[in-house]
Length: 94
Image (cartoon, rainbow, N blue to C red; front, side, top):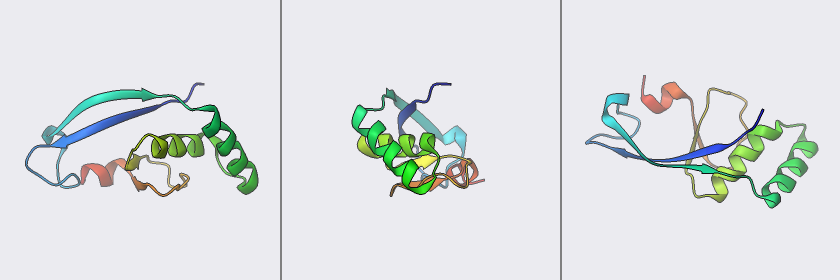
């Protein structure tokens, strides 16, 4: 299985990001992000040191390195690297 991260800039139409429903959100500027060798090495080191999920770590570090501000996941144990983490329900406000 291959892991990748898709960076999406989201523009809301007349409402707060968490207060919008899906009909009111426009997705633009989709970008698939690769993991750099540095991110891979850092992720492996963090995962081994704390018995953590390497895939989560790589996604979070890659997102952070590329200027993302939040992660949307239903994984309640997702690695926290300092970005805001939302469940799908929280993000959509349902």
